[in-house]
Length: 124
Image (cartoon, rainbow, N blue to C red; front, side, top):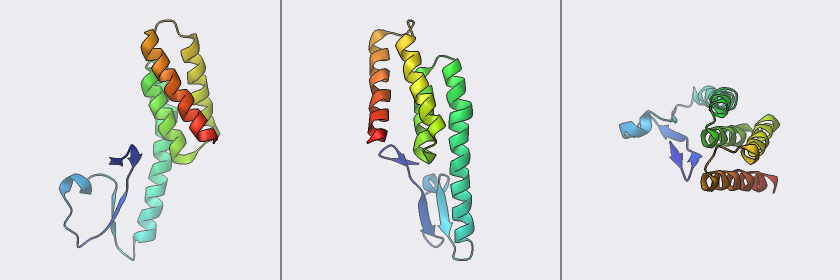
């Protein structure tokens, strides 16, 4: 589940009647005895997601020439854990875009500017 483009995690009491759409995604039902264990599991899953985005999906998209998806996966990975290797992949993608000749100019410029803005926003 996302809100304003950011992942959202719901922590709820088990007695709350939650719509099924919410129960399927990133919901942890609060239970005092298992809360810390569940929260720790959630953090571990987020770290695993970062690796999956960066080392699998982003790399596959990049090799396939889908620069937009690659950029999205690398950005998500960086936002989850701020690993320098993810920023390096974004920088490599920016350079690849600058060299690419087979991308429509308008699309290339929009994606290039988007990645540069992301990088600049992180550096602040």
